[in-house]
Length: 282
Image (tube, rainbow, N blue to C red; front, side, top):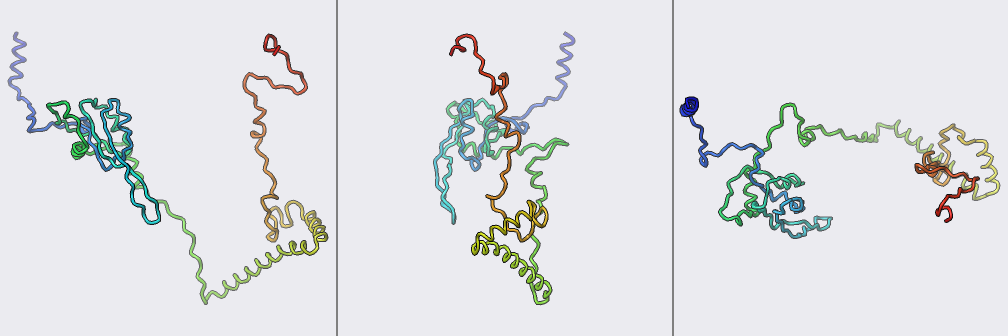
């Protein structure tokens, strides 16, 4: 009895800590599951939250609306939200709808003062859900040493430098030497084109004689051409028909020879073995 009275006396001498609710609201954690708030501008009526809700307490209605076509475009249709309601008498506050929303239209709000005298009044429409969106607190700061969000790291990353072509030289009266060099280069290119046209003209005039000469030239030139492996500048470009056919790699050619596990390879010269039983008779 003395120990019990001692405990009572200790608590009587302590100052009581009483929260003066409802005048003073309690400090709730930032991720408290009080009520689900809706940001109507972010909702695209994808119906993902309503399909994933295990209690089927989300009701969504919408209609199609055609947007006027911009200049040079075509008209597009979009979904317009007509009704978004949540029946909190059925909701079990699992948070699946908040997690699966791909456009951040649903958030948890620490607001908890929405009790009603009638259970039918717990069905709240999008207007009431939109009012609760103003009570959603900002997300808590990251822990010390944690990685920064990808959105911030991508925004602070410097943009890659664009590769631009060097500016073309401006021809002026003081560039007489460069103009002369370009003229000489154009003349050399024209001579190469004329040399490429001569075999075709000779073939049209005397097909038999030209064929024999060209055959002798090809034999003397060899497979690599007169100028080495790369050929000469005056040699006409080969078309796709004259290119050698590329053989497939060995793995592709031998792919038919791969046998399934457990089967024996068949010899072409040996006769098929007869099986015992009804299968062999068949």
